[in-house]
Image (cartoon, rainbow, N blue to C red; front, side, top):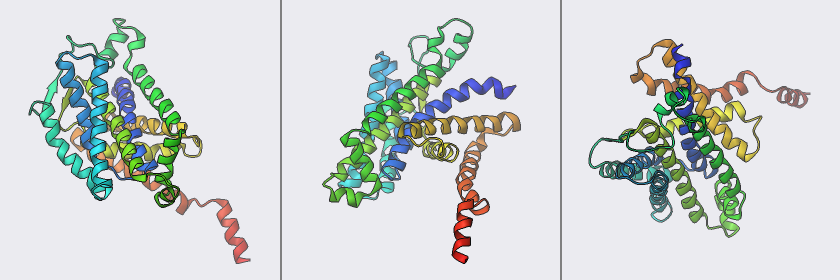
Length: 314
């Protein structure tokens, strides 16, 4: 019963983190860059949003500012990588390290900042779950529905963008940077744009997370890269044979995040595990899904492979 009671909240959180995972997918899968900026830009998006909402800003303007702040973080990482020649993984670490101080400054040199939920009108909030069920709010304000609409809109926009000339050149940069450069593509510009888009989506996810819980705190993005990679891996392992279209691959990332959170919630609810062990559980879940493709190829080889080997032996 504890699991079923927590199911709506787990679904909402899975969708929120799924948007973040799409940002990771753009840098990790499309550009093939290991970007660790996300642990900092996730918090940046949430911090900017909360501070602006407390100051009386419009919710849409605050969300736009949060996305732009995340894109700026991606721009800094891209500058370190393309202009300064620093490897992508180190560039992300440097930006993430700097964002710790930046995020503290945004939060007013405090480790957290909360909104008065009675004074602000948000798009998503944990308390809306109970209010919708109690009939106090319209079903159209249900957090799961609102976040799902956000996720669908993001998938549609990215599907369109990566079908444009610029989007195709970004994908070509990730596929083979030397060949793309030989074709006259500005690969450095594409890397910067990809990092900006990815971190903008991560910041949007952080913004929605802060809306949902009503506050922002300095550690809210810690381990975000692990969750993002987990969602990508889970989605690829489960849906890779079904989803071949680019939009469906993005959907698989969202579904991977939801499955990840459902598994986490199931483990916590049924096994009564201390939540301080959550990071360890997350690492084990990711390791298990990473091992699945290897186990399948090693212990359950395809029949065609066997047939080919038999022909060679003959």
